[in-house]
Length: 141
Length: 137
Image 1: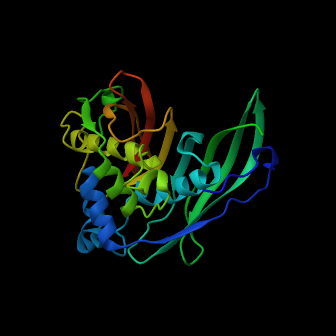
Image 2 (image 1 turned 90 degrees about the vertical axis):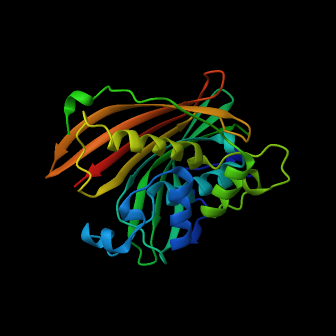
């Protein structure tokens, strides 16, 4: 994992984005893994009865695309401290989701840099599916 | 929903975070970071949403809570999430989810329920605080 010089973090820095295509198989596997059984994540017909175009992905599953961006940027899992996000739109099998973030504030507290970011993800049509904020902490360079 | 359920706590759920769980989760969320996906790693870390995701183990208690009276005939959708990580979770951690309802409200024809899960390790030290809001209807 590439380390960056954290003394060089500036407001407005855009984190390298990541993209993933969501699959039906992974949605079903995710639900089974965490015991999150909900018809909207399992059954197209039931999801359609609830007003969706078909089954949808668990928000937590594609939220990890954002934490992936944060951890890749920060360089170590310990450095990712917080996310606070809203799930704006449903994500369907076949959607390509791109996650990213931009630095909004850098505060030095002793030897620690607390970095506050805006984070988001969007689908292949440019529709925002998640937005919110995040915090990472890194050692000052 | 019954607003008197605000503050209600649910049974603790304890599980061991295994290497197999972490590797499977990293594959499902497509995270290639070797901290999470290298089966040979001496220390295998959990992807950040994994431990929080296990607060979803509370959902069956919430949905089945007759005192809460959540209408399961309506769609239930996750609309907001906060995770605060106190330390990284790793393979071999034995984690306990301590969950409670922190808010129930109505707005715009929908009902909303927010529950919070404190995830602690075997020594009772905090690992993650997860606050999840679901929209019902």
